[in-house]
Length: 473
Image (cartoon, rainbow, N blue to C red):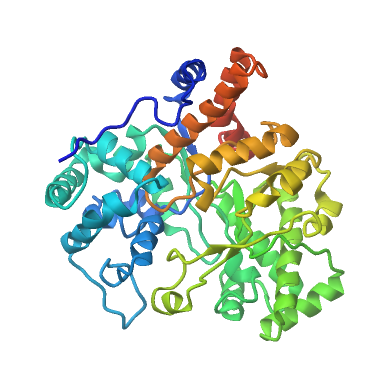
């Protein structure tokens, strides 16, 4: 039975001089508050503050990084208890699910960020001394479950223990935000806020689009059968989200295409979308028009705008049919930005009071497109390496390819984009270590003074993200 160890120099350079610099930089930032401005944790956890049910519900079911790896090896989602659509029976015994995970953990997750994150959780959060495998599975399951029933492991207590200063969840405009309302009225001082994700009502290819737009009209009292009323309804919901602390919008479009149609063209295209008569190209143009409309709204109400393109979402049709969205089957695609964003940038790119954060899953565009765009347009900033690239090597590639052209100050620090609550401190620790790794190399190559690197480390960890997302201002 092997010991579970977290090396204090993990992710630091192997060169002794650079490693010493990285240690010193890390010591100055490791205890800074966590700012998590974009993610998909469940606000009900913090609203109700009930104990997490068990280890499986806490660490496996919410985390598509975990169950997609198991699924890729032929382990069914039914056996992992992943919530499914009506009529699909799934395993309900958390211990059985945990055994499947434990039996495969050490082999399948070797070298992956998930292994690093989970080992951090097992060691730092739960205090385990031995690695998770078949022989320790029951011990892990029982010990985690026992601790989850104590006051110290309630959601709000964990939020405070790990010094989370801000955490944003993500909701549809159709969400009534009841959990955020409960948090707000509870008197608890934890900053759990929402973010406005309008995809269900701005994407003609989103399932139930026309019905969603109808519902949008009903909850706002606007006539959303016409384009003007539709835009007003979207603005009204933004105001509602702002009243619950929202400082950002989020747009998960397939591409970065934007458009700047005339009002008559936009009205005609909206009518086709409602009637379900858009071609794929017309749907893309409509989504692009809405990105430009949303940029204009952000200039008015101050919400930071996040654009997350480049994913072929729900690629596995069978999984989508049985389990719905966000089940680990979203696959990165090549994404073009320079031409795609030009209509929006022609209209709003020079606005210094607008903050649009660009993300990508296509690493080939870092130095060719994204860094030059963000290194010029005042409205643009670059989001961190995201999703499949939220990893040590992904972070390294991002810094290496972006910094020379965009610098550090046209980026926005780190966000974890997670559904698994306890991976938040683990992921932020990885990001802090990798930034110190990169900065230490610049120092030892005499490209940056160590005092400057220390300033940058604090900014990348804490200041830039608060500025970009307008948190606490």
